Image (tube, rainbow, N blue to C red; front, top):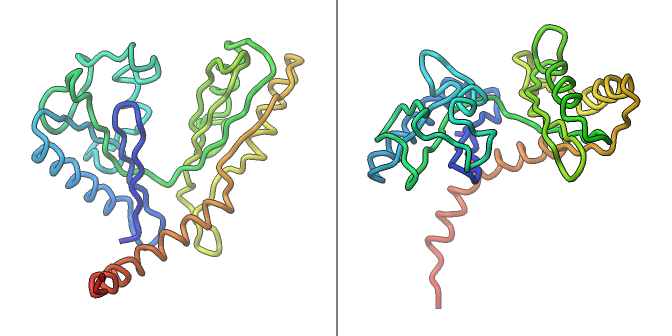
Length: 228
């Protein structure tokens, strides 16, 4: 099945994304839930919280679950007593907690403004989020970074596909323009922008599809090769 699992360090986070319109988020949610159950049954003492389409029937987002555990305060500020885990034993300092879920494929855009005004950064981050008046699919936060302020954006795919049947995203250029306009009102310039290029993401999608279809065949071939 053409899905991809990504692991992130600092606690363990396992988001499962669909990279093909032939695979639904509901199916990815079932995979995530089964993965969580296998984990807590195989490694005693571990715990799992679910998010996205693995979290039924609430379908709570990753940001909501992260906030509940003080994720954004860093590892020393996390409060294990506040974690609402779904599978396994209560979270502990020894094992932490593993987040497993199914969410739309996400691209990333980070914009640094050339000032140290964190309040301005937070104001901009709030304004561009995917709320009325904001940008579609954008989840954003601001934080201090190397003497300046960075506005980090995760960008989810739109529910509507393009005419070619591909996922659609708010472009990094549109995000950069909106941030630049708001910063300019305070006479602040942009310092730099980085993003996960959508063309590269498309290449990654095609590569993963190829791996999903060809790797089983390659494995069978290698298994039948006699080594000297």
